[in-house]
Amino acid sequence: MADATTRTWHGIVLDVLKRNEVRLVTYVPDNVLRPVIEGAHADPFFTTFPTAREEEAVGIVCGAWMAGMRGIVLMQTSGFATLPNVLASLACACQIPLLMMVSERGTLGEFNLGQALVCRTMRPVLDALAIEHHTITRLDETEFIVDRTIRQAVGTQAPACLILSPLLTGGKVLA
Image 1 (tube, one colour):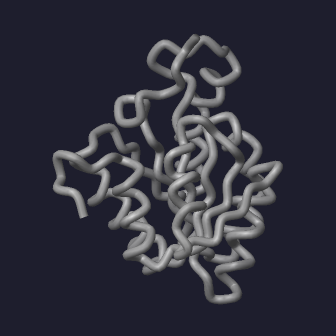
Image 2 (tube, rainbow, N blue to C red):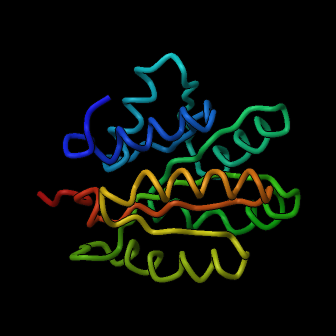
């Protein structure tokens, strides 16, 4: 394992997922999350599953939990906007420790108004559903926040969301 100064945010995320037996990685393709997605595909520990919609990914991870497998949904901010109903009626109602990781768009120089509007509503929706959420902004806090969020979600049997700030990931590179 690389030392802390040479580790990447996505390498840390994959290590912590493995350490916490999170084997299923469902996702809607996203350029910011590409390193996590490619790393999960390359590692036989993980079962990766691309989906067409975020609701589909949530359903797969919730079903996997019911069958005894831990999973995570990877998405970007705009995809989160499609989820309040499935979160309230499935993950929250059934006390499933659904893990979500969202690459944050809509802030810090965003050019897309739709992304900016969804970014403004994501945290209030999470709060309204009483879903624990943490925004990761620095490499040195990544391991702690990801690990403790997974442990809390499983321990309390409640959904949780990890929001990856552009301060951590570099965000979407504008052409």
